[in-house]
Length: 391
Image (cartoon, rainbow, N blue to C red; front, side, top):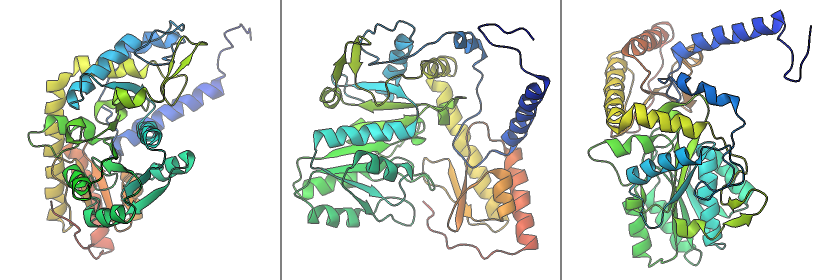
């Protein structure tokens, strides 16, 4: 078998393995209900760009010596999110990240650099990666109780901040908690600052999923820059949809300038967490925003709400205690059998599970899931969990 600098052809066994993987993924995609990844996309017109070693190294707003990049498209994506998040036009900055975890790390990093003596507060319903981020950054932190519906407990937060009022609070807030889709009360958090006369503070908001939902509803909860956020993390592979994990990290330029460093090697500023950054995902996001459009995403969000309400109705018909928060596509219900959880790839925690009605989820899939849950009850009756909320 002839070999070249580009390599050699795959063996028949390797090709068979790839074919088997494709078949497996195609099947598993039909029962993918428990996680917030939208699979309704087609980026095939962009596949030709996979033939280049593109890299968005450096700051997207600063020219680089590395010319194989998509910074122009990245900036266009960021400008859309500037508008969606009501960011201050005179002090806005952002970049396309590897996903929500990096975006959350960036927000906490900025808060720590702004207030080195700060103390991070986060709820027990916060994404599991945040505890890891805090360990990596060596930031002092306190976990705050959550209410039964997943929102941060403001009374516990108030008392804890009061006890530590000599330390600037760095709040890690959620706009859509991982398990229950709860949105933390930013107005309430800001009232705590006012009541305790706290002038030095920072708020980062994890809006991984809801950051592409709340801009398209008529009555959103406060969640973005207009609601008091200093930085935001939004996922790109969730409501928008992407075959590669990605995200959008947004912040105030005045805070980013504090950590910027000039790097002669790449001829740009080092303002991001990563050095080399994916240059394909900004193209995916740009393409989706251009082809689906903001009106299209508004229709998708409405469709997701309708599917969520249908799921709640069907689950309640069979005696399940199903509910969702206002402006959320996360449907929470009492835990079914392990077999059903595994089949439908449901996210489970304690006595509840959830499905997330992303744009690709159909009523037919909901019906099949409900059939399996009903069969669980018929064969092995489950005592329903206490309903924690009915927002």
